[in-house]
Image 1 (cartoon, rainbow, N blue to C red):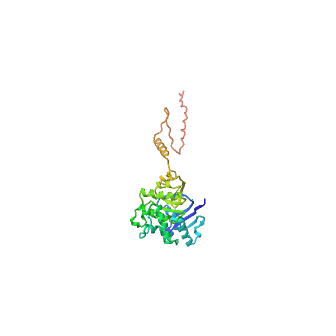
Image 2 (image 1 turned 45 degrees about the horizontal axis):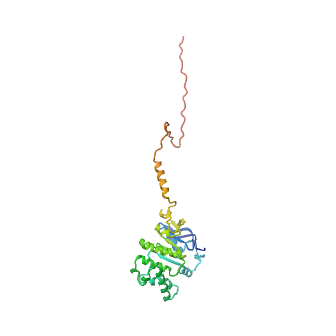
Image 3 (image 1 turned 90 degrees about the horizontal axis):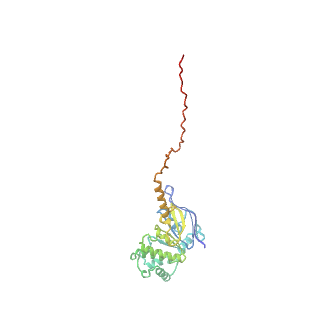
Length: 299
């Protein structure tokens, strides 16, 4: 199975001099075709910067990025734009729908850049809306859609060109739990059909849809673990800490702490000797007994 994404010592630095910010710090990452990768980490850990580099929205300052075997830095701007248009679909937290276009026109917009005729692109956009369950919302403006519907329109727009890679940056950040589940189920269906998905999320529960979870901190990938679909990794629940503790370990730790607070008792009939640390006990010198002087009577 060929590699779809390969980053080697990739760094991204913003600013100059004292205002320099290291967004990515020598990241090494390989993502195979068909993986569903969830990316977690605190704000400012480099999650969005990583997606921007992988999605060809930004170039790395240092290092090498290869997409499907092609080194991205060697691509001319027009080839770079074509690769982004034809192979990558983007889903954003804020939907990014054009307010004056209907749902159908929003979804059809990426196809216009491919030179497709209007009739053909509207027909293809209609099928994409049907796939996300919104065939009855084709002529609605974004302001007339609910948050969940707007995000599904954004997903349809990302899918209309049949991309091999889908990048989702907090796709459920503005949604309630019901609509979040609908959106993740759609992504799960795409993954089942063979799409490669990279998704940034703060919600540990959403990692149950992934086959792999990355934990980022200070611009680097701290942990990278394979997961089973349907299960939430223990490290995700614990916020990505190095060695998450199981319930049994926490109970044993509590027992150990309790036992350490009980003062030790000396064995019966024996006195407990204590010594000061760092000092050796000195032997007490024994005093020699001097014989008593005898006084004789002088004759």
